[in-house]
Amino acid sequence: MKHTLVIRDLTLKHRQRTLVDRAELTLRAGQVHALVGASGSGKSLTSLGILDLLPPGVHSSGATLLLDGQVVDAAQLRGREVALVLQNPRSAFNPVRSLRQHALETLQTRDLQGAEAEQLIQSTLQEVGLHDAQRVLDSFAFQLSGGMLQRMMIALALLADSRFLLADEPTSDLDVVAQARFLDLLERLVAQRNLGVLLITHDMGVVARCADQVSVMAHGRIVEQADVHRLFNSPQSQEARTLLAAHHSLTMESCAP
Amino acid sequence: MSFIQVRDLEHGYSAGGLFSKRHRVQVLSGLNLDLHEGQSLGLLGGSGSGKSTLARLLMGLESADQGSIVFKGQPPFLQRVQMVFQDALSAFNPQRSIGWSIAEPLRHLSDMDASACRARVEQLLQQVQLEARDIDKLPAQLSGGQLQRAGIARAMAIGPQLIILDEALSNLDRVLQVQILDLLAQVRRESGTGFLLITHDLSLVQRFCQRVVVLADGKLVEDLPVTAQMRFTHPAARTLQEAVLPAMPRARSVREPQLQA
Image (cartoon, rainbow over all chains, first blue to last red; front, side, top):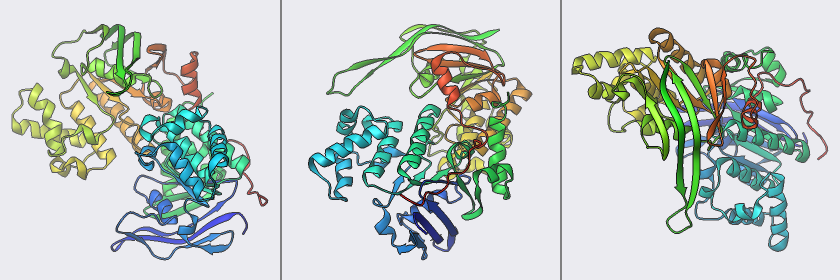
């Protein structure tokens, strides 16, 4: 399978307790795969488990990762083939390093430096909509808004030339306007750069807006996988129905003619 | 009847650190608002539009640079107006039980004795669908959604006429948001409490409020009754309306995975 990232048999445990049970996911280049579920269903752990960035005490028992059909190790993927965007961008940056230093560090993994690196950084920041590039690069994380930091996280993913992006609740801390702009950007990159995205969210509005495939998670298990239209029109699992009922009770009034 | 009357309100802050140049940030300028008794009013605005500043001024947590806020109800003020904060965890004393915190307004604002307080707290916990045994738990032992409900119980304790919710639902998932809005609607039906729901999310306002005002550039730029067909006209308000996520997937085909990079 070309241009895919397949996760098989991802099981995560804390002591005897199973937190994620045999999760299977397939990400394709140029598609958005949404992973939805209630708070505490194991969505975030799944994304951390894929990159083997688990919190202390949680361990994975032998997941298989296939990149374009080849078995790969999580350590080979993270920060290179696969980038991660987190919910709280402020804590994802080193507080005592400027954003320029973050960008240069990322480019070092590709052996790029000097004028070439500088030029690439400039154009990538333009691409994600950070037009005041010099000011942003000279800033530290605490000096920028949440929306700007989320864009910078995406920029770092592009600088690493990642083909896949794992985005864990990337818009939950943003207001609706910043959220809409972030999703615009994501969709543009999927179309133009052929990026494959795993989008973790609890908001079915975000799913309706930009997902192609959807996996529904409950109590650590993936209980349903479907394309977005089938999920919205005929949800099979109880979990999907609960999420959709909450979503529709908030949106149906506003979309009445 | 107007319950709280806000006239020509101005407020700002000084930004910048000790060693850098000080900048003056004007947050509110010339804001007018009438809050009516028993009404659910939605206050909508983007990040940084001054929503929380307005809430803090209404509650008297800060005093305004200019302008007036007149409370026309029966004093004392805190017996009539209560507030629920966005960050539930930091709004509770971490060393005291949930029951102790919920009873705090009763201890200060009523003459109930200890056993009456406890009975009232038990009734409130039931009303917000928390369990009776949660009364002795510490804030850190509850989830975000449970703690936010405890915050609402505390605001309801003294039976106020108005409860201000400052982005109190924003950190919760959709299922919990709907549950809490239904709970608040029930409180409104049963006791006629008015609400000021502060949010950036129009869909919450449409579900819960009777009237909506939009804050932009330091003033209110829209003031409308909430209907399914309502349309804003101010550009900032339109931006908020257009950013609401769709109810259903668009009628596009699913993107085909591209086999050539």
